[in-house]
Length: 286
Image (cartoon, helix red, strand yellow):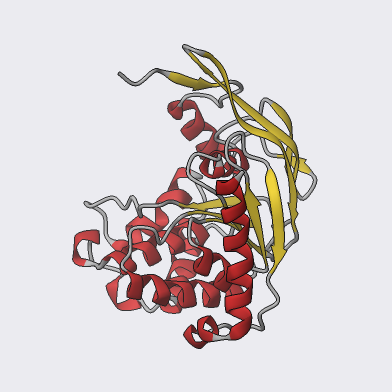
């Protein structure tokens, strides 16, 4: 039997969170990107067996407009970190800040792309994209214009009136990315968005995401289990230790941009990937 687990400092129940989102309004003249500062972050879960530390003194920064990936073994707290960065959880200790302001609740300045697209099957592509804008009681007319531009960017402009079940997995995930960007957040959080895709679609989406990031200039925190994915997409890779998660190593990715599928065949790509694999090999040997 699974034991019930609850996080210390957890945010309010779902209904309250939805209410907070609905009442929030995007800041005027919001920046296209923002800095993310994570300082001595701790999270402890309470279980029937006592406290369970999930994150321990986790610290790193993400510069405005940077693309940073977080790698780590299963259960190290990567997805927990994303929930903290989104304001869905509150830390047991430490701080997490967006451009100097503490993140302690969901905010329109943050967009989230989940592992699954989680599209509503009874709504069209366009209506799915507009869901967060309606939840925030934002300007739907302006959002429609922005949605049209974003759908053109991801080559889905001809599918705006289609339903999710009429799209491939890769197309659905592109809709999920557009939905996360439609209200123009400063920070984009991505939780293994390509994990469920086949290898060919995954590579195609990596190239597509790089283009979207370059065009929108968002700050991105990207969670992944894939070393090639992290190296291809990132400016910097943060490697987390096994639970309790902390920063084990960071690696600057100095590959020139824009990157293509051919980039993954380059000697430097192989060198960087090997460095990361050696970090994981060291974890297993410890």
